[in-house]
Image (cartoon, rainbow, N blue to C red; front, side, top):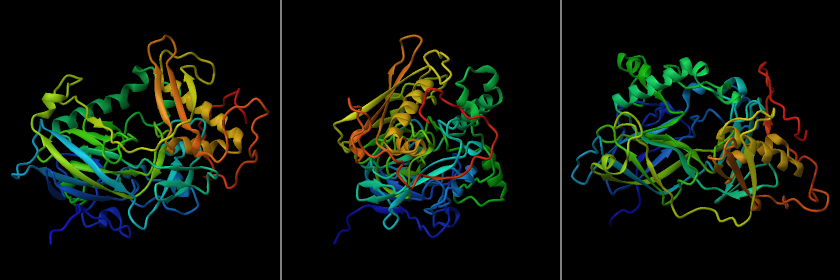
Length: 452
């Protein structure tokens, strides 16, 4: 009798560390990280993944693991996976790799996740000047729904997706990445006009041997030393896809990835049970271990046919994403607007980052009127299925951004009313998020008009 179902190509044992897995994980991008498996176009295969921290962040009711998280290990990825066509010919540079997400979810027996903010001295987040402390909320899954004892009164369906999926860069593309990011790190503060809070974190995360894991390549060898000094960090999204954090890439979605090396060398990880647009708290989705069931097709010559370079070389391209038909259905939303005027009243010119920050702050302050701490709402808006938009980018001087929150996720009516607000519970719902002290000396931003 024929066997049905996907072939497991990358298994995960959650009792083992990333370097102890049958196929050792990797946390860098480099063309010389060898593939751990091979799949054929049209074949449905299964890839299992640890959470991005490789098990370093736990379900313990403490935020100490967040405060002292090792940022050098981010993110642990499964793969690379070599893709060949029906005749065994590998994908070639210049092709497009069409990757369909057939199925996905948490690993059985590990149905929990976490949302967090890093300490301001150790990664921070989008609002790190307002929320400098490390915080964490644990979430538990009930089928498609998630709830947290640390943010009570909230329950919502997750739109599960991989935060990272991408192909390996060529050496030429890797050199482009490293040169432009080194230039930004070296001269950005002097040459760029930046929103003040956005450069409180590193401007770029440059190659580093610290925490580097390169799959099957053994640490300490001359090969490892060479590659570790060149390999790109996985933190930003780039031309190869990577850490795009597109919350709608769930079942039925397709990703059209440019191919830069023979076999494409596909890698994936950073599984999310749910995420809000922007993932504003940085460790901000519901992070989890998980699996993907994928099917690949090779579009020969597809890069030239379908992708237009936006830069000086043919490598300056970006993937195309086709969103699947599966997503939660919400009919009522509360939408918060932000404009490019910061908390001090300073006008910024068409700055969408300032506008989105203002929209998120407006939403946090409003929702804290309904019995929640602001830390609870910061984490919630980072991981619930809220919709972020750039609503206006041409009307000088203000960019306009909006954040739409589905009202059905709350167990109370959060809409404004003519009577004294709110009618529902007004006490802060205990317990609050797990929280550490902030021991640094960077100044925090206060909004003089906000509620305390």
